[in-house]
Each structure stands twice: as structure tokens, then as C-alpha cells.
Image 1 (cartoon, rainbow, N blue to C red):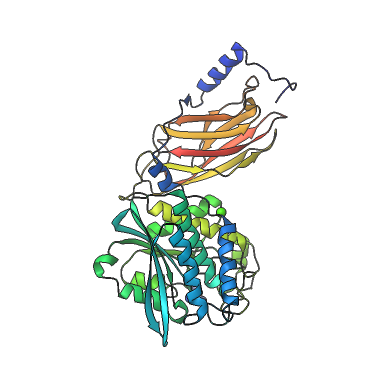
Image 2 (image 1 turned 120 degrees about the vertical axis):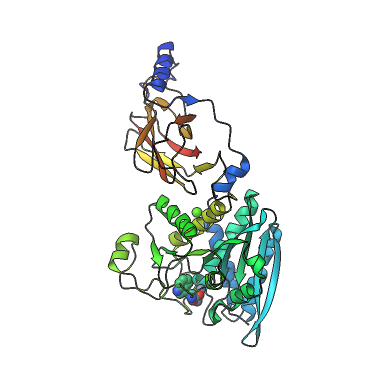
Length: 445
Ligand code: DTR
Ligand code: CA
Ligand code: ZN
Ligand code: ZN
């Protein structure tokens, strides 16, 4: 709020007022906490997966189908061309790739495996998707969607230079549509000692269905919770995937005793009225009307579902590969860097961070790092909301504080709050003129 457009100097009284406000029932701003170690920070906060990148891969795979008889099916040239496309991207990004050949129905099949150098080889976090389509079409939702999301997650690991505690492996399976042939071949030929090193296999098969549902595999509880917490942070309800058992490439891993999980947006089943209430879309219509049909093209994709599931995939890979003990290391950062506009003299806005993988309560000295861009920070009231809704005042408004921006780290005694869950930063601009936005914020445990 400015009474005029002059930049008001802060009077000593105003300075005292700010100092007092900082002491009254508000968390005292402390010197900027030392940033968490890069590894710890990167270990938990996955980057946003750009939807445009994922859709770019869909376009490429669609073109491959068009140039190879209209499909990317096992035994057809379009499948091997798809493998070559994905492999080239991974090789360029620094992955160690290998192609595993097998024979099915008289034709040669190919699994593409990519290992990210580093991490504990005895603890492997594994994400995969089948790359083949049915012979009737290009197979863009089924399953270029999952293949592209896994590819883009792998490329995000490379872009971030991410070095998690655990080893990361990614795979694109052949001949899933013939009966999980490629993934079965991989698991059956994996020595038992190697199987036991896989701490979890994450499967992504059909994650962009036009009339999307948000289904989470109900297999390994930790993997399931990782996905469910992520969607909770988006405010998107999920349902347990009930038709999945045995129906995609997680099945051979599950049969071999590997913890599995995954995401699915639905195939030929129809959406109920209750599901429309949760997710929108069309009641009585199949989640994907083009399942296994020639109309499974790049037009057969729900961008919001594809984006959310791609981001969820990255979140799970980052989260599950963080700590070798399952408990992320102390000084772990949970952050959100999405910009949120703050309406001038308007309603409060919030930005969410999902904390997972912790046990017990939050610390008595929880560090709350805030970066708000604003042209008159005295307009702003800032609170931290715990998962149960309890509000902790971080900053009061102060009509005399005309300086720009709120860039500070607050220390909050959150020891009475359960650590895991959706935490929110709430910001309200209570005075006219001058506006801004939440640039980013983070919790350091
Ligand atoms: N079998 C998959 C599609 C599919 C059908 N039900 C589920 C459940 C969970 C994952 C995938 C699926 C295919 O046609 O590729
Ligand atoms: Ca995204
Ligand atoms: Zn299919
Ligand atoms: Zn599929």
C-alpha cells in the first residue's frame, strides 16, 4: 500500500515496529539457514516435468508409426524405430543403455534398459513402461504416454545431475500387448540376487486417457502412499487401481517378490457419476474410447492427466531414491517453486508442499524458507499451515514497511505437528496498490 508513489524511507519507528512485529507471536526471522546439501535438496524435490517435452515425444512416436505402416507393434519396423528413438535420447543424456533381445510369435522383440551411473547398486529404484502398441494403431495413450513420461523423467534426472543414494534404472518393454512378453523375459532372466536388489518397480501404462481417472496401484504400501500423497498435494483424489493385477508390466516383478506400484488413467471401463464428481469428464463414457483402436492418436490424450502423472512419476523416482534408510537425511528440503499470484488487497492464496517419507512429528525448529516478490512487503500477512490446518504466523502486516519482497527464513516450533502431509504457505495482501507473487518456498527438516 503506498499513500503516494514516493518510496518511503523506513523511519526508526517503522524499523522498531517491524522488529516488534517480528517478535509478537510471530516466528523470528533468522539468518538465512544454510542451504540443504545439494544432494539432500535434489533428493526430495523433484523438478516439474514439462508437459511440452512429454508431448514432443508423443509427436515423435506418432510420426514413427505413420512412417512405419501406422503402428509401433511388436515385430513391426515401427517398434524397433521407437526403441532407437528413445535409446538415442538416453545415450545423449549420459545413460548406460542396453538392448535385450527376445523372440515372440516368430519375431524379434527388444527391451531397452537404461542405467543412470551412480547410487547404491544394491538398492535399485526402477521405473518402466511398455513401448509397443497394438497393430491397429500408433498407441499414443497406450502406451506412448507412459513411455514418454518415463523418458522425460530420466532426462530430468540427467538435466538435474541428480545423484540419489539409490541406483536408478529405467526400462521400455517390448511385446507387452502380446502378454507382458518383454517384461516377463527380463524378470525371468534376471538372477535372483539381482532381483533382490530392486527396492521398487514403478509402472506407467496409459497415463493420459481422454476421460481420465486417477488410479494408483494398490500393491506396495510405501510406493502407493508416495503417489497418493503427491496427488493429495495437488488436491486430486485418487482411487485404487482394481483391474490392474496381472494386466501390465509390473506383474512379472510382483510375481518375483519385487515391491511394485504404478499409475493408470483408465481404459475401456466407463466413468461413473461419482468419478465425474471427483475428476470431471463424462459419465458412462470409457476412460479411453480409443483403447486398442486406430484412433489412439496424439488427439487421444488429456493434457492435464498426462502432466500430473508425469510429475507424479518424477516425484516418486526422486522420493523413493532419496534415503537408503527410507528416512530422508536431516536437512531434507521439501519445496515448491511454482509462482502463485497474490491478489492486491484480496483473498489469501496458498502454495502446497507435500512432505512424505518422514516418521513422527515435525521438528521444534522447522525452517521455513520464503521467497515472495512484492513491491510493498508491509501489505503482506504470511502464515504456515500444518497438514491439520494449524496456522503459524510467520509475518504480520506493517503499514510502515515499504520495502520490496519477503525473502527470509523463519523458525517454527512445529513439534506438535505430524511431519508427513500437505503443508501450505498462506499469503494475503491486506492493503491496496502494490502486488506480487509467491516465487518459491521450502521446508527444511
Ligand atoms: N493391459 C494394458 C491396459 C490395461 C488394462 N487394465 C490395466 C490396468 C493397469 C495398467 C494397465 C492396464 C494394455 O493394454 O497395455
Ligand atoms: Ca508439469
Ligand atoms: Zn494395450
Ligand atoms: Zn498398455
